[in-house]
Image: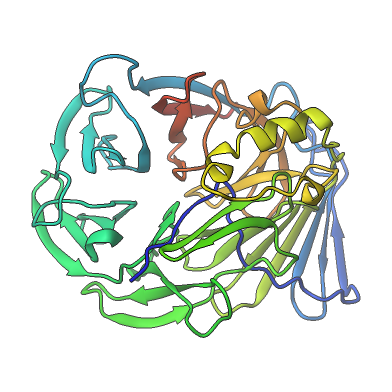
Length: 408
């Protein structure tokens, strides 16, 4: 079986844009609170279909006194040596209730555990295809029984590990291709989600298969999919295919929530959607913004970064690069249901620092600036007032960071 590896910073995924319908109910909020603090000035419209439309202005609720702040308090990584804190490629992160941080090191093919102070506790597994070995681990998920599931598609299995680092068992899982960042996980009902190719679709499409605790399949669902014009460059070979997104193209980024439904973002027009697993759109969220132009320097820089693709024989057509940047770089759904939206910035060096934050209902709270550039791959974790993620230095060496969210 051919192995197709997708490693794109932005996922080219599904979307069905809801048809425009007349408004039935309009709610708005613009009066100041009794204590004089600022209030939300957007509006909420309920359509006859039941879908809720939340329209946000460019400014949020926060002022200089109430805005959230992000403070880095832990960084794990080094530039030198051969220790466990030297990372080449980080495929996934997880955190346990004690604050221990679990890191899949993609080059060494092992799982490294660090305590809440950043000290190395243990390394689990090694590279290989035998028992207690990994070949291409790409995902981590806590099961309801407290065990950690490690998704390893190149070994066609999921390894189950207890909190002491011992291998408990393993489940056979569909392999054959690697999709990163891994989009699966457990929902609050204990159902496990893992990806599979949609063989009924023309071209590449994805399904999420739902499994019970024994990894017996229950059913499958289709995540949102981008239905616009093709926005990737592709190189097809006998052993598989390589794809890379057309720089600055609008796309769709989605996240599976703990409730088993989806939030997804249309990155060009700044549109966020909440959708059920059955495909019903529950909520649409927009925010006013000023688009940024793509300069000739932006194009030159973007093409230079695709050297890995062109060196393999891929072709880059500059005429397909848009003249306007998308509004959104990506979407993170925090464990409390709030939405963190990475903004596309004027300078590439500033990317990953600026985020918009929305409450779970879609009301725009305000902007947050991170003291480091947060990568969206692997998927960051926002949980219990902390952000766990990966940043890189100027040499693109990865570091694991933990930052505290201060909410005045």
